[in-house]
Length: 228
Image 1: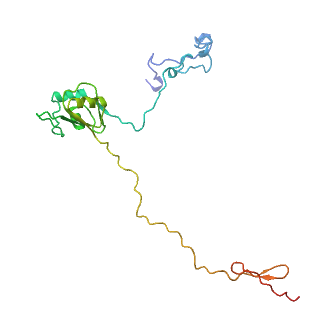
Image 2: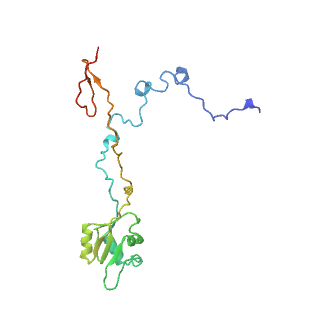
Image 3: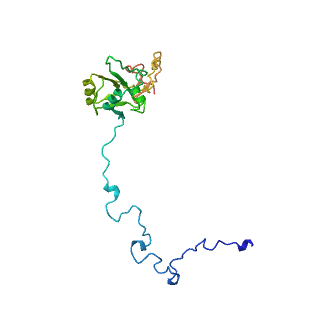
């Protein structure tokens, strides 16, 4: 076998169909486009999103209304009933480590963000926590979180507990402090030692009178007419 004998395997390559070359070729006349219609014309392709003239999908769905404020606070939420159930089951086993307390004398169980995170009720330490009012409260709770709903507060206080809201963290000031050591700006002092101009040239009027205007344009002095 030589290089000029190389050729593809039979059936591996199919010849391109040449359309519009007469009826004997099998794809003559209409060239496989059918008779008439938009798709038979030149440039008659239809966009993929075209739905035949009916109302398109992007016009059938409702518009987005409202807005989300930029300064909104995204809370991690937990229901007060679930907190009470965890406290009753003794699942807050880390409360003494994180500042909580539960004595035999009936003191309330301290529940703060760290206790909730270690118990698995919330996942993040950075996001604030909000306690919702769903469920029943059977334990005395001392809840110290970022936010508490009115119904949750009423249920906690009705069971003998109380609520404390954490103060929001203040953002670090990013603006530059005003400079206080800058020297006050002093304008240039006015020139007071300037001497008055006394060498004013005499003014000669057409009639021959010579007048001088020394400091402040003083009164004119008559001069004798010159001999012609």
